[in-house]
View 1 (cartoon, rainbow, N blue to C red):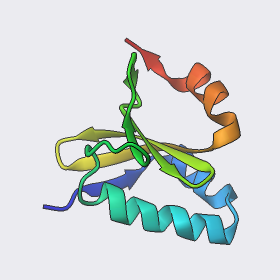
View 2: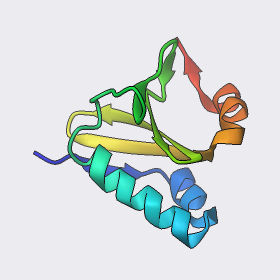
View 3: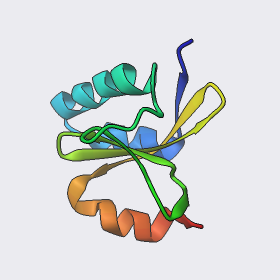
View 4: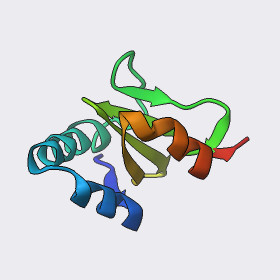
Length: 97
């Protein structure tokens, strides 16, 4: 059963700020990876984040990182962040355990 991918308002703004080609790549990755197996951790794409409650997962798409949570049959995309800004974003928005 496919998961529903829901973008938080912040994630929608993040997506709008990306260039058209990067935006298309991110949308494609969201459909491919988060629609069917969002919790399937892999060595390169999907990573379960440790030491924080929220966000639960990170999806790597080239130089962009997508942070999301999974609950039931829904995937909530919290943010789409450039690789260079990940540390500051996590410091500001992550919910530590």
